[in-house]
Length: 305
Image 1: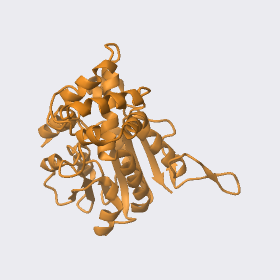
Image 2 (image 1 turned 90 degrees about the vertical axis):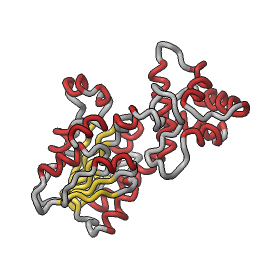
Image 3 (image 1 turned 120 degrees about the horizontal axis):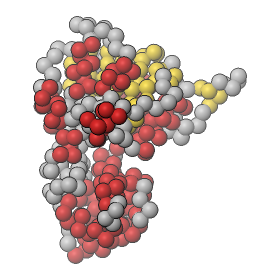
Image 4 (image 1 turned 45 degrees about the horizontal axis):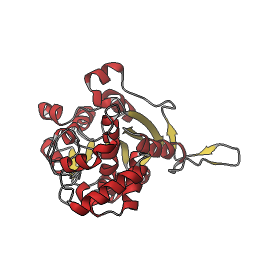
């Protein structure tokens, strides 16, 4: 199992995130991004016989990593339904700690059939849950020019979003864009040699976020975390790009996604959380060298008041 996990995904900031959870042996914990199970297995090592761990994942591939442990319950679902499932299991308002590692796993980037990486040709898919929902190809072929431009601007922060959308809409009139190769060929005029990788990373990120409705799902999960965590419960979140990090930062600081702080009569900020690291935690140089994909990771830890 350990070997499988190392191929599937290397857990980022493992020690720091586990320390952030401050695990009690008899506690109830949730790993809302189970993936390769690396974080979950470390949590289980710290739990006693009375402890419980729930792991969420909507990807069928993750099910191959489920540990044979009676203290572990696998939830085959998007983490946006966190509250519903924890209520179903009778754990609403009982959770001691929740971990969210929001990054796309190495497994997804390295599997040419999933369509997450521009390094391979294959179906333009990008769905985390391959059993349902629209693919990246569906979006590229069916969205209006305006809707496509919004996706690239909002989720990829691309200044050429309108031109990019226009070129795609024109190209699909002649031939349906079905593969990564088709897609790359159409957008080739935008990929200058000096910043090609960065540009493509932004484009693919934008499509992936739209395909999986990542921003809305993240908001729903964060709101649910407030409902399932008990007072003193810990929320530990690892983000990988500025869009999701901004949402998490604002929510932990102010309890909303705009970052608007309410104050009481005495001028004290009202927030449902107490920040445990005022300065964001980033991977050590040795970890980045060992696992380059951890480079953009940011870790935030808060305690429910």
